[in-house]
Amino acid sequence: MLKNVKWFFVVLVFSSFISLSFDKRKTPTEKLPLGAQAPELVLGKEKQPLSLQAAKGNYILLSFWASYDPNTGCFNTEEQKITLFNKPSNMTYNDWLISDARYLLNRIQKEVVEWVYEKDMTDEEKASHPTYETTGGYLRVLDESECAQIWWDGLSETDKSTIKAIPNFDGEIFEECTGIKIREVSE
Image (cartoon, rainbow, N blue to C red; front, side):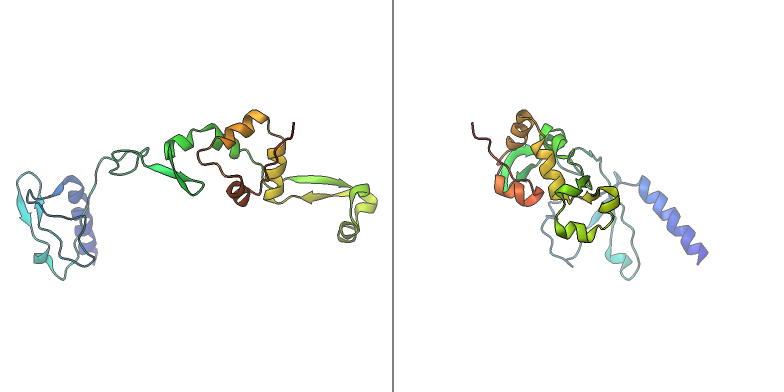
């Protein structure tokens, strides 16, 4: 067993140094159905055919690689546009990552606590938090939608406009996702 494992690693190392490519015949590989016969492979520049059928019944390790650009993704030649608010936009994922709107939305605090004074407590809150009599109130943990609404209400009009300028902005969808109710200020 150990001999086989050693050979496996030798094959693995050697496969990292060998480039596999499809031969020059026009073999459409993008639309091969699942389970279809693989096209004939050619090994490196010497064009020595490598037959997968010759190894039928044995395990075959194929190592493919290409240059990879983490900004665009493997094999992508152009950045794809993203969908915002259920509609296609002209914004790419990288555009979104560096946008002011994303920066602002990432600043929404989570698990915020708020002190509720005894005079502001409901009867239900008093029953749930009997220590209010000695402390004068209790700490209420806000849920994420409450935190988001408090954050939104505290934003400047400029920051709110930045978020509303997200392509295809839709207040109803925004509220559904974040819990933030956009209240228009009447002048």
